[in-house]
Length: 395
Picture 1 (spheres, rainbow, N blue to C red):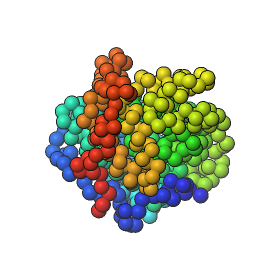
Picture 2: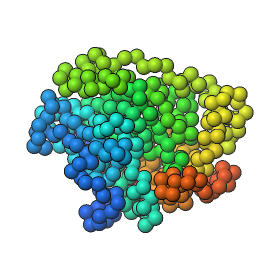
Picture 3: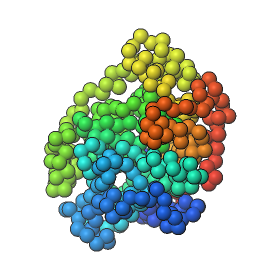
Picture 4: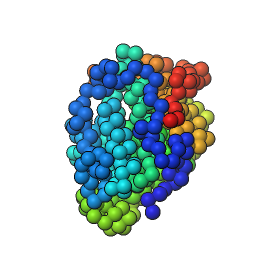
């Protein structure tokens, strides 16, 4: 009962019986151990809490491995060391017969994970970008590994679950949202492109809901997440502890039967008529014009939000989601996303967007190109050129 549609499309390029976390081609750049960077600045013993068993040498709670992201003051934002710690735990447990399921959660009461540590990305981008490229390489390999993991992985997508937080949860086999879930792929607001396999799901939502979510970057509810294919089950926030205890004591199926309930109606599904109509435009400019012309208040709000985003990020995001439709596996999409992420790293807008939001906090980014009309086809295509090297999943 744990399996879902996404895992039916799981990549097959990694042979059965191997571990993606160990049997993978490493990033072909300087080893992380050769330099201490901002991407590795968090205490590796505390940023992820792992209750490990069997080969890992600890104790397992009734056969369930527990992974807790533990940076609550930063809403558990992912660092490079956290990616490595999660990968190592999953690799250990894959061949450990004492572990039959895994639960991923976030410490604190604000959310599972607010995304990657973009301030670290900012500093890396300003100094050549090598650390950012290596971080994305390892992060995307982890996303793919989670998507094809042979044991059920339960993700508790409570509270804020955005960007990189979506990457470590939305590809799990059992995805649980709550009434406090606030999910988003907000990358266009900082001059970046949706990644971590997000465009795989965004390209497969009912109608054009995914295009709307990608271009606005606006948060959506747990009910919306289920409707769009980011999640499977709805458990009220105040019952999440009971649900976790039931997973440990009675198993996943019993926990779902006891604690999951019908989600409330999806607000986005209720707006699908104007979303499908307006987002059918050929370009982002066409989409914005259609939104402006529509008489629905939310359509005009969406137009205003899109107008505040990076023009080149918007254009590349629209193209990335459309290309992802024809890419058959999560790995194929992650390979494309590594290209667009590296393209963003070469751009003006990624550094400028992070500066405006999180460094100087003036919320007044000066985008370049400054308008959608100034974005050319060549500008867009450059983001899809080889990352040199491209992301690979070969042993």
